[in-house]
Length: 114
Image (cartoon, rainbow, N blue to C red; front, side, top):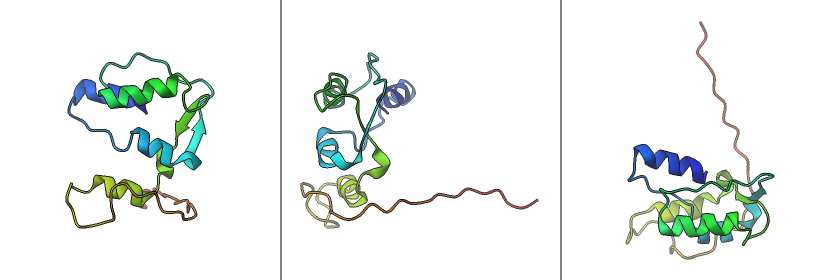
């Protein structure tokens, strides 16, 4: 995901990453996967915060080969961080993610009949 963000910023330098911060990573330990061969590329288009988290992941600070499976991030957690500052919708920005069972969603794509 980090190299995709880096490549995207080569064309669209003002792209913001959501949620690729340390707070999200640490709040979702249950959504961590493992990279058998972790990336170690030199990424030049990350923000200082993104670069710090990426370097910590590459350096094994959170464990060997840690990868956050972003599709498993609690939706309420993500939604609250996407709201404009000062918005009255949602709870406080610093609350822990809701403890509810993960419900996988099945996405089905089909083509219209011919």
